[in-house]
Length: 310
Image 1: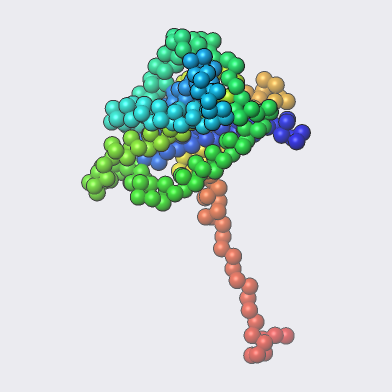
Image 2: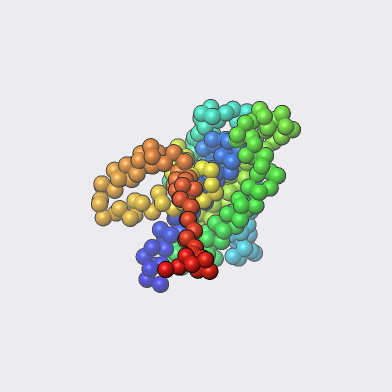
Protein backbone atom coordinates (compact mmCIF):
# COMPACT_ATOMS: atom_id res chain seq x y z
CA UNK A 1 0.00 0.00 0.00
CA UNK A 2 2.89 2.38 0.77
CA UNK A 3 4.28 1.67 -2.69
CA UNK A 4 0.98 2.65 -4.32
CA UNK A 5 0.69 5.75 -2.16
CA UNK A 6 4.16 6.83 -3.29
CA UNK A 7 4.18 5.79 -6.93
CA UNK A 8 0.47 5.44 -7.73
CA UNK A 9 0.24 8.81 -9.48
CA UNK A 10 3.27 7.94 -11.62
CA UNK A 11 1.89 4.51 -12.54
CA UNK A 12 -1.44 5.99 -13.63
CA UNK A 13 0.39 8.68 -15.60
CA UNK A 14 2.44 6.02 -17.40
CA UNK A 15 -0.75 4.19 -18.39
CA UNK A 16 -2.40 7.44 -19.45
CA UNK A 17 0.52 8.52 -21.64
CA UNK A 18 0.77 5.05 -23.13
CA UNK A 19 -2.87 5.29 -24.20
CA UNK A 20 -2.23 8.69 -25.76
CA UNK A 21 0.69 7.22 -27.67
CA UNK A 22 -1.64 4.52 -28.95
CA UNK A 23 -4.01 7.21 -30.22
CA UNK A 24 -1.28 8.14 -32.73
CA UNK A 25 -0.58 4.50 -33.53
CA UNK A 26 -3.94 3.89 -35.24
CA UNK A 27 -3.52 6.63 -37.91
CA UNK A 28 0.06 5.45 -38.40
CA UNK A 29 -1.29 1.97 -39.18
CA UNK A 30 -2.68 3.56 -42.34
CA UNK A 31 0.49 5.57 -42.94
CA UNK A 32 -0.94 8.90 -41.68
CA UNK A 33 1.27 11.18 -39.59
CA UNK A 34 -1.47 12.82 -37.54
CA UNK A 35 -0.64 15.07 -34.58
CA UNK A 36 -4.26 15.88 -33.75
CA UNK A 37 -4.55 13.69 -30.64
CA UNK A 38 -3.87 16.51 -28.11
CA UNK A 39 -6.80 18.43 -29.56
CA UNK A 40 -9.22 15.54 -29.08
CA UNK A 41 -7.67 14.80 -25.68
CA UNK A 42 -8.26 18.40 -24.58
CA UNK A 43 -11.80 18.43 -25.96
CA UNK A 44 -12.70 15.20 -24.17
CA UNK A 45 -11.36 16.61 -20.92
CA UNK A 46 -13.35 19.82 -21.32
CA UNK A 47 -16.56 17.88 -22.02
CA UNK A 48 -16.07 15.85 -18.83
CA UNK A 49 -15.02 18.87 -16.77
CA UNK A 50 -18.03 20.94 -17.87
CA UNK A 51 -20.53 18.14 -17.20
CA UNK A 52 -18.99 17.41 -13.80
CA UNK A 53 -18.79 21.03 -12.59
CA UNK A 54 -21.35 23.21 -14.40
CA UNK A 55 -24.54 24.00 -12.44
CA UNK A 56 -26.60 23.31 -15.57
CA UNK A 57 -25.75 19.61 -15.27
CA UNK A 58 -26.38 19.24 -11.54
CA UNK A 59 -29.61 17.34 -12.25
CA UNK A 60 -27.69 14.82 -14.37
CA UNK A 61 -25.14 14.33 -11.60
CA UNK A 62 -27.77 13.77 -8.94
CA UNK A 63 -29.82 11.38 -11.08
CA UNK A 64 -26.93 9.27 -12.39
CA UNK A 65 -24.58 9.25 -9.41
CA UNK A 66 -21.40 7.37 -10.31
CA UNK A 67 -22.73 6.58 -13.78
CA UNK A 68 -22.11 10.20 -14.73
CA UNK A 69 -18.44 9.35 -15.30
CA UNK A 70 -18.98 6.62 -17.94
CA UNK A 71 -21.48 9.00 -19.54
CA UNK A 72 -18.75 11.64 -19.93
CA UNK A 73 -16.49 9.02 -21.54
CA UNK A 74 -19.25 8.09 -23.98
CA UNK A 75 -20.11 11.68 -24.88
CA UNK A 76 -16.44 12.58 -25.31
CA UNK A 77 -15.93 9.58 -27.58
CA UNK A 78 -18.97 10.46 -29.69
CA UNK A 79 -17.97 14.12 -29.98
CA UNK A 80 -14.43 13.11 -30.95
CA UNK A 81 -15.77 10.71 -33.60
CA UNK A 82 -17.96 13.39 -35.17
CA UNK A 83 -15.21 16.01 -35.13
CA UNK A 84 -12.74 13.40 -36.37
CA UNK A 85 -14.87 12.83 -39.47
CA UNK A 86 -15.34 16.58 -40.02
CA UNK A 87 -11.61 17.24 -39.74
CA UNK A 88 -10.39 13.99 -41.25
CA UNK A 89 -12.24 14.06 -44.58
CA UNK A 90 -10.55 17.26 -45.85
CA UNK A 91 -7.27 16.93 -43.91
CA UNK A 92 -6.51 13.37 -44.95
CA UNK A 93 -6.33 14.39 -48.58
CA UNK A 94 -2.91 15.70 -47.56
CA UNK A 95 0.12 13.50 -46.98
CA UNK A 96 3.29 13.46 -44.94
CA UNK A 97 4.46 16.70 -43.41
CA UNK A 98 1.50 18.62 -44.89
CA UNK A 99 -0.93 16.42 -42.96
CA UNK A 100 1.15 16.90 -39.81
CA UNK A 101 1.00 20.68 -40.24
CA UNK A 102 -2.75 20.59 -40.85
CA UNK A 103 -3.37 18.57 -37.68
CA UNK A 104 -1.08 20.86 -35.68
CA UNK A 105 -3.17 23.79 -36.92
CA UNK A 106 -6.28 21.95 -35.70
CA UNK A 107 -4.74 21.61 -32.23
CA UNK A 108 -3.81 25.30 -32.18
CA UNK A 109 -7.34 26.34 -33.21
CA UNK A 110 -8.87 24.33 -30.37
CA UNK A 111 -6.38 25.82 -27.94
CA UNK A 112 -7.25 29.38 -28.99
CA UNK A 113 -10.96 28.61 -28.64
CA UNK A 114 -10.48 27.16 -25.17
CA UNK A 115 -8.52 30.25 -24.13
CA UNK A 116 -11.30 32.60 -25.21
CA UNK A 117 -14.55 30.79 -24.38
CA UNK A 118 -16.19 31.38 -21.01
CA UNK A 119 -17.56 27.82 -20.82
CA UNK A 120 -14.00 26.48 -20.73
CA UNK A 121 -12.88 28.89 -18.04
CA UNK A 122 -10.65 30.87 -20.40
CA UNK A 123 -6.95 30.92 -19.58
CA UNK A 124 -7.63 29.86 -15.99
CA UNK A 125 -9.51 26.70 -16.88
CA UNK A 126 -11.88 24.60 -14.80
CA UNK A 127 -11.14 23.59 -11.23
CA UNK A 128 -12.69 21.39 -8.55
CA UNK A 129 -13.53 18.48 -10.83
CA UNK A 130 -14.89 15.72 -8.56
CA UNK A 131 -12.95 12.48 -8.27
CA UNK A 132 -14.34 9.58 -10.28
CA UNK A 133 -16.51 7.14 -8.32
CA UNK A 134 -15.57 8.85 -5.06
CA UNK A 135 -11.91 7.82 -5.24
CA UNK A 136 -9.83 9.08 -2.33
CA UNK A 137 -6.30 8.33 -3.58
CA UNK A 138 -4.90 8.90 -7.05
CA UNK A 139 -3.55 5.36 -7.33
CA UNK A 140 -7.15 4.10 -7.42
CA UNK A 141 -7.36 5.36 -11.00
CA UNK A 142 -5.34 2.27 -11.89
CA UNK A 143 -8.70 0.46 -11.83
CA UNK A 144 -9.86 2.73 -14.67
CA UNK A 145 -6.77 3.13 -16.82
CA UNK A 146 -5.38 -0.42 -16.59
CA UNK A 147 -8.56 -2.12 -17.92
CA UNK A 148 -8.70 0.53 -20.63
CA UNK A 149 -5.15 -0.34 -21.70
CA UNK A 150 -6.07 -4.04 -21.83
CA UNK A 151 -9.21 -3.36 -23.89
CA UNK A 152 -7.35 -1.10 -26.34
CA UNK A 153 -4.55 -3.66 -26.79
CA UNK A 154 -7.06 -6.44 -27.43
CA UNK A 155 -8.86 -4.19 -29.92
CA UNK A 156 -5.57 -3.35 -31.68
CA UNK A 157 -4.62 -7.03 -31.81
CA UNK A 158 -7.94 -8.01 -33.37
CA UNK A 159 -7.77 -5.04 -35.73
CA UNK A 160 -4.35 -6.05 -37.04
CA UNK A 161 -5.61 -9.45 -38.12
CA UNK A 162 -8.89 -8.20 -39.56
CA UNK A 163 -9.74 -7.12 -43.08
CA UNK A 164 -9.65 -3.49 -41.96
CA UNK A 165 -6.19 -3.92 -40.47
CA UNK A 166 -4.90 -5.49 -43.69
CA UNK A 167 -6.36 -2.57 -45.62
CA UNK A 168 -4.56 -0.15 -43.26
CA UNK A 169 -1.24 -1.91 -43.89
CA UNK A 170 -1.79 -1.96 -47.65
CA UNK A 171 -2.43 1.80 -47.68
CA UNK A 172 0.62 2.39 -45.50
CA UNK A 173 2.90 0.42 -47.81
CA UNK A 174 1.59 1.75 -51.13
CA UNK A 175 -1.56 3.84 -51.33
CA UNK A 176 -1.74 3.80 -55.14
CA UNK A 177 -1.41 0.02 -55.28
CA UNK A 178 -4.05 -0.37 -52.57
CA UNK A 179 -6.42 1.88 -54.53
CA UNK A 180 -5.79 -0.18 -57.67
CA UNK A 181 -6.71 -3.33 -55.72
CA UNK A 182 -10.11 -1.88 -54.79
CA UNK A 183 -9.28 -0.53 -51.31
CA UNK A 184 -10.73 3.01 -50.94
CA UNK A 185 -7.86 4.92 -49.26
CA UNK A 186 -9.88 7.91 -48.07
CA UNK A 187 -12.48 5.78 -46.29
CA UNK A 188 -9.91 3.72 -44.41
CA UNK A 189 -7.66 6.67 -43.60
CA UNK A 190 -10.61 8.53 -42.10
CA UNK A 191 -11.56 5.41 -40.13
CA UNK A 192 -8.02 5.12 -38.70
CA UNK A 193 -8.05 8.83 -37.86
CA UNK A 194 -11.43 8.55 -36.11
CA UNK A 195 -10.31 5.53 -34.04
CA UNK A 196 -7.33 7.51 -32.75
CA UNK A 197 -9.53 10.56 -32.11
CA UNK A 198 -12.07 8.56 -30.09
CA UNK A 199 -9.33 7.02 -27.96
CA UNK A 200 -7.76 10.41 -27.26
CA UNK A 201 -11.14 11.94 -26.40
CA UNK A 202 -12.06 9.15 -23.99
CA UNK A 203 -8.65 9.36 -22.29
CA UNK A 204 -9.19 13.09 -21.88
CA UNK A 205 -12.55 12.50 -20.20
CA UNK A 206 -10.96 9.94 -17.88
CA UNK A 207 -8.05 12.28 -17.09
CA UNK A 208 -10.05 15.36 -16.07
CA UNK A 209 -11.17 13.93 -12.69
CA UNK A 210 -7.72 12.36 -12.22
CA UNK A 211 -5.99 15.75 -12.60
CA UNK A 212 -8.80 17.60 -10.77
CA UNK A 213 -8.34 20.59 -13.10
CA UNK A 214 -8.42 21.21 -16.84
CA UNK A 215 -7.10 24.10 -18.91
CA UNK A 216 -5.71 25.00 -22.32
CA UNK A 217 -2.26 23.63 -21.46
CA UNK A 218 -3.62 20.10 -21.89
CA UNK A 219 -3.80 20.41 -25.68
CA UNK A 220 -0.74 22.17 -27.09
CA UNK A 221 1.87 21.79 -29.80
CA UNK A 222 4.29 20.51 -27.14
CA UNK A 223 1.85 17.71 -26.32
CA UNK A 224 1.73 16.77 -30.02
CA UNK A 225 5.50 16.38 -30.09
CA UNK A 226 5.45 14.41 -26.83
CA UNK A 227 2.82 11.96 -28.12
CA UNK A 228 4.79 11.53 -31.35
CA UNK A 229 7.95 10.86 -29.34
CA UNK A 230 6.14 8.10 -27.43
CA UNK A 231 5.32 6.37 -30.69
CA UNK A 232 8.69 6.83 -32.38
CA UNK A 233 10.82 5.88 -29.37
CA UNK A 234 8.73 2.84 -28.56
CA UNK A 235 8.20 1.76 -32.17
CA UNK A 236 5.49 2.80 -34.61
CA UNK A 237 5.03 -0.62 -36.26
CA UNK A 238 3.89 -2.43 -33.11
CA UNK A 239 1.00 -1.77 -30.78
CA UNK A 240 3.41 -2.30 -27.87
CA UNK A 241 5.69 0.49 -29.06
CA UNK A 242 3.56 3.54 -28.18
CA UNK A 243 2.59 1.98 -24.86
CA UNK A 244 6.22 1.29 -23.96
CA UNK A 245 7.39 4.67 -25.21
CA UNK A 246 4.70 6.54 -23.30
CA UNK A 247 5.41 4.68 -20.07
CA UNK A 248 9.17 5.16 -20.42
CA UNK A 249 9.18 8.86 -21.28
CA UNK A 250 6.52 9.63 -18.66
CA UNK A 251 8.53 7.93 -15.94
CA UNK A 252 12.01 9.12 -16.96
CA UNK A 253 11.80 12.64 -15.43
CA UNK A 254 10.55 11.14 -12.17
CA UNK A 255 13.30 8.50 -12.11
CA UNK A 256 15.90 11.23 -12.66
CA UNK A 257 14.40 13.62 -10.10
CA UNK A 258 17.49 13.30 -7.88
CA UNK A 259 19.61 14.94 -10.61
CA UNK A 260 17.66 18.20 -10.31
CA UNK A 261 17.93 20.30 -13.49
CA UNK A 262 20.21 17.76 -15.16
CA UNK A 263 17.29 15.38 -15.54
CA UNK A 264 15.91 17.50 -18.39
CA UNK A 265 19.28 17.35 -20.15
CA UNK A 266 19.45 13.57 -19.77
CA UNK A 267 15.86 13.24 -20.91
CA UNK A 268 16.74 15.14 -24.09
CA UNK A 269 19.86 13.03 -24.63
CA UNK A 270 17.79 9.86 -24.37
CA UNK A 271 15.48 11.14 -27.10
CA UNK A 272 18.41 12.06 -29.37
CA UNK A 273 20.24 8.76 -28.85
CA UNK A 274 17.08 6.72 -29.37
CA UNK A 275 16.27 8.63 -32.56
CA UNK A 276 19.78 8.04 -33.96
CA UNK A 277 20.39 4.44 -32.97
CA UNK A 278 16.87 3.02 -32.70
CA UNK A 279 15.18 4.13 -35.96
CA UNK A 280 12.50 1.43 -35.55
CA UNK A 281 12.02 2.13 -31.86
CA UNK A 282 12.72 -0.02 -28.85
CA UNK A 283 10.28 -2.74 -29.85
CA UNK A 284 11.78 -2.86 -33.34
CA UNK A 285 15.30 -3.18 -31.93
CA UNK A 286 14.24 -5.99 -29.61
CA UNK A 287 12.61 -7.76 -32.57
CA UNK A 288 15.86 -7.54 -34.54
CA UNK A 289 17.86 -9.00 -31.67
CA UNK A 290 15.45 -11.93 -31.43
CA UNK A 291 15.66 -12.62 -35.17
CA UNK A 292 19.46 -12.44 -35.15
CA UNK A 293 19.82 -14.93 -32.29
CA UNK A 294 21.81 -17.93 -33.66
CA UNK A 295 19.94 -21.22 -33.81
CA UNK A 296 20.80 -23.79 -31.19
CA UNK A 297 22.73 -26.72 -32.64
CA UNK A 298 21.62 -30.16 -31.52
CA UNK A 299 24.03 -32.03 -29.27
CA UNK A 300 26.00 -34.77 -31.08
CA UNK A 301 24.57 -38.24 -30.63
CA UNK A 302 26.65 -41.37 -30.15
CA UNK A 303 25.69 -44.79 -31.37
CA UNK A 304 26.78 -47.24 -28.71
CA UNK A 305 25.38 -50.14 -30.68
CA UNK A 306 28.09 -49.66 -33.33
CA UNK A 307 30.86 -49.36 -30.81
CA UNK A 308 31.25 -45.57 -30.94
CA UNK A 309 31.28 -45.29 -27.19
CA UNK A 310 34.71 -45.57 -25.51
